[in-house]
Structure formats: C-alpha cells, structure tokens
Image (cartoon, rainbow, N blue to C red; front, side, top):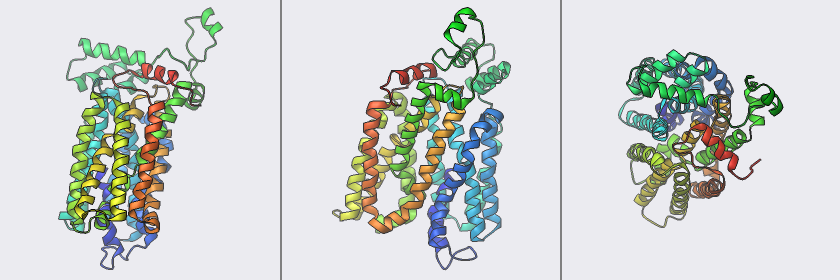
Amino acid sequence: MGIMYTWPSFTLKLFGSANTTLDRPMTETELSLLGSISSISAIMITPFSGLLLDTLGRKWCCIVFYMAQLMGWVIIVMWYKVEAVLFSMFLSGLSACMMLVIPIYVSEYCQESIRGSMTSGSMIFFGIGMLLSYLLGGLLEYKMMNYVSLILTALGIVMFSFMKESPLFLMQKGREREAARSVAFYRGMKTSSKEVIHEIENIRRTLNPNIEGDITPQEEKELNPEAPKKKLPQWKYLLKSRSSRRALLVSIMLYSSSIFQGLVVVQVYAEPLFEKAVPSMSAMVSSILFAIVSVVAGFFGAYLIDAIGRRPLMIYGSLATGVCCIILGSQIHLDWGPSWLTAVFMHVYCVTYIIGAGTVPYVIVAEIYLPEIKSFASMLSVEWAFTCNFVILFIFNPLVDAVGLGPVFYFFALFCFLTIAFCYYYLPETKGLPVDAIQLLFLKRADLI
C-alpha cells in the first residue's frame, strides 16, 4: 500500500510536464486528484467493510482488498491515458480498507502484552512501502518501476494466502476447533497446549463481556437467569452503549488529529514539497531520507507504545510535533536560517509525528471496541479518517498557493495543540488491558455525550 499511495510523489511533476509519458499533460485539477482520488474510493468502500469483515473474515477481506491494488497496477502498466491512470488510483483506493482490517486482524491474534507493538507494525511496513516507492521512482525508469510494483503486489497476495484466519472471528462463527488451530499457528504450539486452551477461554470471555449493552430487563434476568441475551443490530447496540459511543468519539478525534497534523501531505507530495522547501538539496534524496526516517521512527513508536503507554505517547508526541511545525513553518515562511535547517526540522517533524499521532490512533481503534460492534464502529472511524484524508490532500496545493507553505504548518501546529487538550481529558490508558476492562475505563471518563 505504501508504494501505491506515495506513487504520485515522483509522477506528479512528470505527468504535469510536456514530456509526460501519458497521452497528454494533466491539468491542475487532475494533478490534485492524482494524490487524493484514492481517498474518494476509500470513502465509498468503507461503509461495506464492516459487512465484509463479518462475512468473509479478516484474512479474506485483506486478500479481496489487495486484489483492487493489483488491478490498479495492471491498468497503469497496460494503458497510458490520463483517465486510465486516474481510474487506477481510484481503484487502488479500494484497498485502503486494509488500514482498517489489518490492525483489527493483528490485534485479534496477538497477546495483550505486545498488542500495541504488533498493531503499529502495519504503519512501519507502510513506511517501508513508501521508502521502496521513493527508491524505485528515483532509480528506475517509469515503466520498469510500474512492473516491479506489480510483481511485488502479486507476491504479497501469494504470501498472505498462507496466513490463518483471526481466532476471534472463528469463535464468533462457532468454529472453535479452527480457532484453536489458528492460535496454535500464531503461537507455534500444539492445539492441546495449556496456553492455547487458556487463550480460547479468554476469547470466549471477551465475546460475552459483563459490561453494558445487555438489554434484557433486570426483572426478566432475575426470573429467568439462564435466558439468552437479546442480540441487537450493531448500530442499535452502539446507540445504547455509553462506553461504545465514547470509544467511537475518541477514535474519531484521534483520527482527525492524525490526519490534520499534516504528515500525510508530506508523504504523498514528498518530492515536489522538498523541492519547494529545500531547493539546495536533491528532491529525490530528500524524499528517500524522509522515508528512511519514517521507518526508523515507526520502530521507535512500536517500542514506546507498549513501554510507556498510548496516552503519554499521544500527548507528548503531539506537543513535540506542534513545536516542530511552528519552527518549520517560521523557517519556510521567514527564511531565518540556512536551507539545510529546513530539511532537519522536516525530518524531526516526521519522527515526532510518527511516534505519536502516526501510531497511537491505529492501535487504539483496533483494541477499544467490543466484538459485537468492532467491525461497524471501526468502519465509522476509518470512514471519517478517509474523509479527512481526501479533504487535506485535495486542498493542500491550493492552500499552499493561497497562503504559502510556511503558514500551512502553523495550521498543522494548531491541531497538534488541540490534540493535547483532548487527550489529556478524554483518552484513557489502554496498554495491556482486555477489551472489557477498556470499556469500563470509558464508562469512568467524564460524560462526553
């Protein structure tokens, strides 16, 4: 995914020039769409992702969404029309739902002690894909880069086919033996081992939490304690469950802060952005260094999220990112230092963002929802994220033309400081906790709704 989503970074200038490899140069609107149209298809497909998650399961959802990206590369390789390229980017955006599916998938087969680190691994590998995209775009000719990307995508689908389904999903479907085999596969143990049996018991407890959302009247429970709980549609469950509503509000706010702290535009438009911000350095070299820093920062974020917790990482990471945005914006705006200083603060900004807002929201959203509404609530959260993603990518270039690149970073800084205030009051610490304990924490927070 990282390769496809940062592909516009090195093709933007090529497609807009007279020497374009396409049938004609792209217009300004088409260039804006090149980086943002994938968010439109992501917004369109996300409402169906919850249903697909509950119907196909986590593994097959990933494979189906992966196929959309494969088809996108096939179109890019075979056709050289502007419309075909834009359609391929639209098609590849359908695979963006993997940003929803993979954190859920990973969080459901990991132990709670390493859940944060493993879930954040999806962002690390997104960064590795981004690095590959910059390297391939800088070192290979246009056609060859596309063929290599197509081969890597096909290879990814083949490798994914050897994965096991999420044990929690299998338990939800009553397939306990398969769930035990899945746990045994991911633990490297036999299905009869004590640890596998213990984890199956924990999943069974998670599927029947004693929190809220059970709408059986208290009098009926007292008269007939063995009566089964009434099952609600997911949207009704969400409306009746205070803890789930609060979890949804927190996840929406975290995703908003993640998008509007701004790194996504730097990732998608890295090469032209570095060319504008740091003209004394090669834009390609700057982009590759930026991707390397992103990957390294991702590993630090994955370690720290289980070492110090989600809440402090989000608060202090956003504080550091806000300060970097102000310094970086003033440097670009007022030009008070040498140009290499701009590159330094651009990379520091990348590190602070990825450690905080670039990692924490994806981990939090994967672990805070009860199984009864996990697919539906996660879908709503990610739908909001993709909407924000499209908005910021589409308006970024016109905004830079209107006010300049420097003041745009002041806008990012404002969101960083708003994030600190929100997380201080409303974000509970979820490190190492099972989902039922996390839901109880949301019940104890000050009333948000």
